[in-house]
Image (cartoon, rainbow, N blue to C red; front, side, top):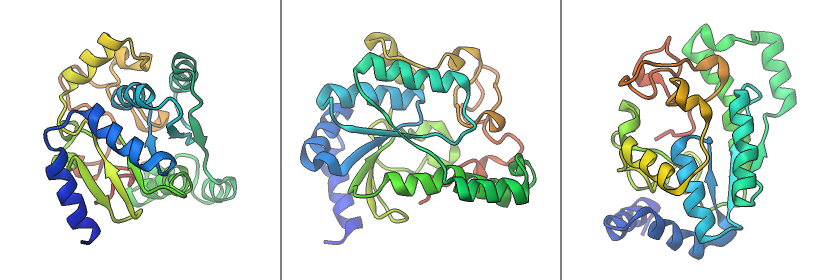
Length: 235
């Protein structure tokens, strides 16, 4: 059975399971070969709560691009203190970062999609590849409802680009379900969510949106919706 067939079997097996049971299966089965990749968004904060209840020593990491909001850095500290954990932080390679900024400028991402993808490659994708070292699976907080680029994603996928099983426990959840869970379990969240930022990433690439708008419409707002992915979730 190849990887894609294996993932298809897993999807059928876990189709009716709740997110915590799904996480428990993989966390207990893979141990230190699985990690939660957290962007500190509300979905990832929900998953952090679930993961730490199952295994307080489970690996959780995040990417610091060097361009995050102060509120995001504060949330890292608050989350660590709240759960008694240490989120592992990965930074861009400084040689590649210096070369990019020196040759293409600090705000190159506004100039073209190609340059924005170059920015994401240096600040996100390369650190992510180091975070994945030694893993067999990764967990993330994707939901189909989030954007047009995510509507055909599955509960469990084979991540061909990284050679890993990718687990999306909240794929079918609505935004309302996410926030109900946060309120019910007193999960720490980014204060910017109360200021019109449903989706939060690098400070220069995000702006507030009006209530009811596409949650990711504030990301890379100068680009068309079908291009608004950084490359972390290639399919």
